[in-house]
Length: 355
Image 1 (tube, rainbow, N blue to C red):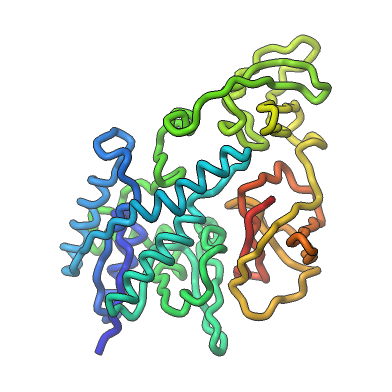
Image 2: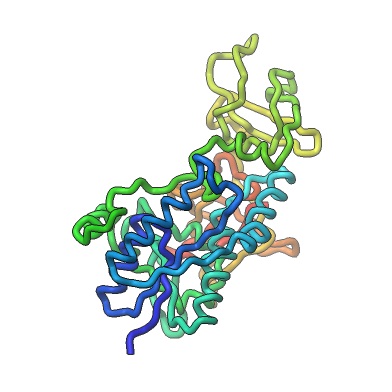
């Protein structure tokens, strides 16, 4: 009897091809469209209706059942409320990591297991390798699309029930498969940005939930050079949207956010993209979610402090207050609230939130 698989079908090309591959391999496939956000129904920025129609067309073409799952309540409570709370603390959170942790690999996973599915599948670009009784999360074949960074905080126990059908395929091949199978999503644009914000400007969205609060912008010598609308609208290293014109005695070079003072609602900005105030050789992490049972040599690891960053050499030391990460080379704009993710070659070891 074929394994029953519940595949998350988002209305995009990656999940469409994932479903098609599973069907072709003989799995008993059911598609599931997850609705995780409701506040924007009917607005130009919300594509959920169009995405559902595309998911339905794909499942119809593949002759598989499509069900709808509404995780809006779980998303708001576990992802969005944390997102807002972190911003209020002056951090820059990554809600996509928490969406994977609490929605796709918890709520969705729990639904599948409760309803007698053998596995779940998603269109993430990553791979699994079974080593004895352990399932290792590996980088995808298409390194430019690898999404292990976003999966660093899921429970390692769920991996043995996961299937990532496109992890060993290049993105160009995924689109070719979709076109050959006449799936309507073959040339659909990939979604970008934070899932619930979509294509809209970040400050415009955020102002619906967090009030603007005028504050001061200082240069590195504590000279007042501008005003801002609230530190939660800005992230370390940011260049755009500062609204700083010509400053007397300064060059015409762009300005970058080098420090955020959440208590006093002020920003410090500098003009050199690699200014010393933007560089640090270590960071702290309170808690690390390990995806492996046995830790490797902590003095010789690779890591990323942001998505698409090249792997950086680092060492890791456990303290009474968490972990200290030391880098071989200084890192630019280390950002509290973002995640640091550790690797041993192509194996994702896990990660944690930068303190």
